[in-house]
Structure formats: C-alpha cells, structure tokens
Amino acid sequence: MDRKEFIKSCGYACIATVVSSALLESCSTSTHIASAVTSGNTLSILKSEFVTGKKEEFRKFVIVNSSKYEYPICIYKINDTEYSALLMQCTHNSCELNPQGTFLVCPCHGSEFSNTGVVQNPPAEKNLQAFTTTTDNEKIYIHL
Ligand code: FES
Image (cartoon, rainbow, N blue to C red):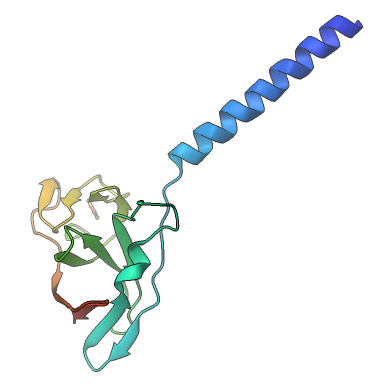
C-alpha cells in the first residue's frame, strides 16, 4: 500500500467511525430506572426523573420496580399534569414488555399497547393493568 492509499483508507475509517457513532447514538433507547419511595401501597417518584439533563429534553417514560409485583411498572408522561402507570406484563402470555417511544411492545408474539395501556395489536386482547396516578408540585404517586 502506498502513502496515498494509506491516507485515503485512514480517511474512510475516520468517516465510518463518526457516522456509526452518530447512528448508534440516535438509535439508542434510553431506559431510565427511576428511584421510587414506597409508602404503604403507594410508590412515589420525583417529576424530575423525566428530565434528561439536556436543555428542554424530557423522557417519554421511566421505569420503576416495586416489591409488590414481579414485573416493573412503566410510567408515561401524557402531559404536564397527567401520567399513566402500566404493569409491564403482557396480557397475552405474561412476557415482559419493552417500552418503545409512546408504546409498549411484547418481544414474544408482537402485541403492542399504547402509552395508556390499550391494546393496539393482537394477539393480546386485554388492556394492560393500569394504576391510578396522582401528582403534586414535585412528585408522582402510583397507587398500587
Ligand atoms: Fe405478549 Fe404473547 S406474550 S404477545
């Protein structure tokens, strides 16, 4: 390999590295596990769990774990005052769901649910178990 070919192949390698890292960053799904405080049958998390740290960028959902359920709970921010809290257990055959943007997908047979837990695609026929949520100025309360 002569000098010119070597420099050319180094340039291609640099471009490929920059492009692939940009693609990987844009494709990554950021699943954030929120810190929850349990009090009786209520979990509470800070609303700030939805803040990403980037200016004016917010997470669509966060995940919390509860000792009461075998499956995690996905909390979606519907708007500034409304949140949904959904048990991540598929109603078809109990596989754990994957949140993807504003919906949850079952990796087992492909059922899809909206961010309020409503079935969008079969084979599941029942909506997800949803928990009542309430809020105050700084926290979201999930009533189990
Ligand atoms: Fe979820 Fe079958 S277990 S679609």
